[in-house]
Image (tube, rainbow, N blue to C red; front, side):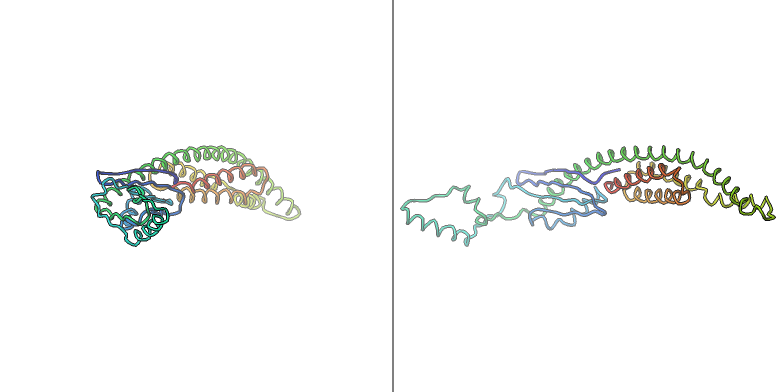
Length: 289
């Protein structure tokens, strides 16, 4: 079981260049990878998406890529003459006005945007280093998501324990209510037909039939089955978020049926408490892969 938020970083390098990667993950109904960085990485879109699928099933992943050149002589270098011309004109004018030589350091020249253009690295080299760096970043995100998943799992288990306690109380009350309902029905039916000649056995049978329509034993059993299933799902290695959400819906369905069948304030505390705990679990399901 994994969460959906995390952060990871990684780098890969050789004597020529280095690629750095940072990845951040947020909640998402499906898997979406968004790559940020230089256009030189654009040709790797398919490979990066395939790599993301190996690590994640759901979530919004933002990937930030950058590269540093360690050996510029390994790349072609060119000077943008248009930018150079725009730079030299004001320098010449300043020399005439001030009657002095104006010099620029090599570092300053390299720092002028667009003046010196270094050729892009080879695609094979860039692909190799990028996929290594991104894999390391994704591993960091995955570790965070596993840790988050464990915290959410413990939270959900604590909510399940509370639900089980409330269900146990509800079950005890319902058994008493069933008997009270049957006795009340018998009494009311006898009052309605007290002046009529009615088969007492038939009257008893009708009372039992009406009481059974208000019986919630099956709903409680199904609720307990869903709770057990939920505990099993929490131990799955694959994606569980949607399964948790589905089981919460089923549990809500059963408790709503119980509430509609037993319109009695005697069990309202248990019903409200169980609904509240289910809603808390369902909220956390949105944070689980």
